[in-house]
Amino acid sequence: MRRGRILKIFLGAGIFLSAGVMVNHITSLTTTMCTEKELAGMSYTLQQFVDTQSAGAASDPEAIVAFPDDPTQNAPAAPGTDPNAPAVSDGAVAAEPTPSATPKPKSEYDKIGISVAADYVNVRKKPNTDSKVLGKLYRGSAATIQDRTGDWVKIRSGQVEGYIKSDYLAIGFSAEKLVDKFGTKIATVNTETLKVREAKNTECAVLTLVSGEESFEILREDKEWVKIMVDGDTKGFVSKEYVDISVKFKKAVSIEEEREEARKKAAAAAAAAREEMAQQQPSQPSSNSGSSGNSSSSNGNSGSGSSSNNSGGGSSIKGSAGKSNHDSSKKPSGGSSGSSNNSSGTIGSGDGSAIASYALQFVGNPYVYGGSSLTHGTDCSGFSQAVFRKFGISLPRTSSAQSGVGKKISVSSARAGDLIFYAKNGRVNHVAICIGGGRVVHASNPTTGITTSNLNYRTPYCARRVIGD
Image (cartoon, rainbow, N blue to C red; front, side, top):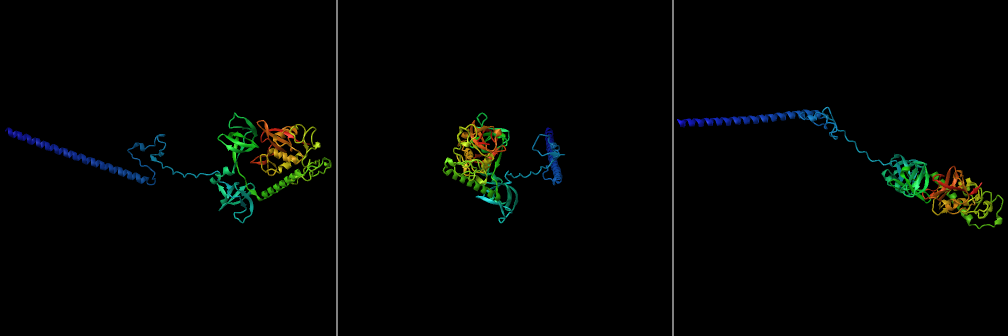
């Protein structure tokens, strides 16, 4: 009986356990199937959404697909959160603009050509080698490019306009490389008066003053200062703040200009040769010094008439002819021609305008320190000495000594034929000849040679009158 009950208990427990196992298996299977169906359904839904979005965005390949379950994709990004993010409008991201091509660097000399010819290149009327030659562009000279025709460029330089083969010109960046070799940097004063200093600071000595709108060659350029050539041996520093810097090149020379220049040089050379011959002739006895209007070719003769054999360039010159040695009628009482001690009165007579005209014949000729040749080279005092010698007036050799002869006058009253002096550190170191109209002619420096300038191009120190009325 008891055995039968135990058997029934074990049998019931087995059936119960078997039922539990079956239930768990069914539950697990159901769960797995449900999960797989859910994943399969979600996959289908996402694929369908992507296909729909992709079809709508096919026309804009830069567009970004936004998922609906990411709320941050449905609204524009907050300002300032990402400065590099593309702009968003109405839930869609705008296409980024196509970046533009980087512009090619442009040279400031794109319209400038510098001659690289061995000597010069002809400027022709038309773009062919059979055309008429209008002028010459010498090596290192520059021209403005106006147009291009095949291998030719139309240029303008100085008074010449015509065509040059482009092979003879450095243009653009190639021209920039030649600026320091062929160009001259110029400083133009942009203030009323500018101090030229001994060194690159405002505590050092002031050498001289230069006036507004005057231009000077730059010898050296630094960050805040430029060293300029004023004249003669006067070189100093000025602040870059008060000057405008430019580059100056030589220009083309027309055929007419070249012929005129040759004529002037020939006339000046002839005048210099006659002067040299007159100096080499022995002095005649004083008894031959006539009082008539006709002057002798003798080196010692002087008269009040016009010169017959020493007038240069065909010009008529009044005053004493040749070199006056000791003509007391031309000197003030107690004075001595050529002496730096002559501090009162004039030392000769003549026409100031004629002196100025004669001096102007030599403009363009070279400056040579220590020289005294009007054609081959002279410095400032050698220039004034040679010019006045033509009119029978003997001046000392240096500008400092010349500043002591004749009669002291105010600079404002200076007229043609008067001497204008300039000083460095209070000592005279440069002389020029007044030509009237507030201008002077002088042997300036190695770059400009004999040239004309405003009388006040730098502050005058004093003025002297060495000829009488």
